[in-house]
Image 1 (cartoon, rainbow, N blue to C red):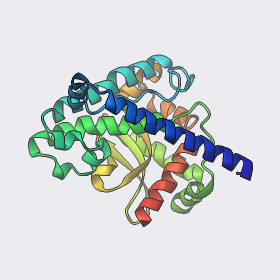
Image 2: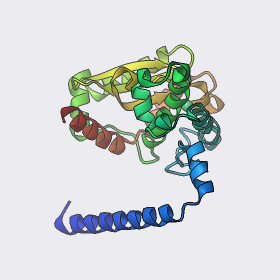
Image 3: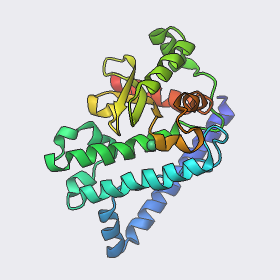
Length: 249
Ligand code: MN
């Protein structure tokens, strides 16, 4: 980044922060009791898709995106809100924090938080790791570390694809970072998150049938190959750098 664009980006950031604060102060002062009750009843919200529903065509079709985001992900959010109703201590936590500390959740709520909270956490991450401008291979530190851990990017792709194919029933294949700084490929059943096992998801691949069945029917390997055309490596690499820094800190 040259000096001019650095200054420009600083100015933009400062402007956004100022606007954000103003908005926050403004909306806080204008919050009505009814609004407070509504947000207390539904502390978790469905994040909007960061792109158009048809942006990932032809790899993931718009109909699948509508169902996957507006129905499936929305349902995890609704059921998570229902689960934490009457538990302000849980409702005030972030979903990743809840899922990372399932043992801290009252036992009668644990399955609901694991499934619905996991579904919300996993899908919030899923939309971000995809992009119409994705594909190819990661550069920089993540590219280097993948080569180190798996031999090459092609070998990594091959292993992640095999893992995705090995999930029996519904689940996910993941690239995760351990507390010790090790990159690993793993799978999880249902909506279980690696966060619950103290590992940070770096990349996830949703292999529930709802993610691909309309377009690919039973051809999961075809969907897995398509996935690699739309991975947002720019986001994933930045997320990896953040996760690594946090583990060191
Ligand atoms: Mn899904």
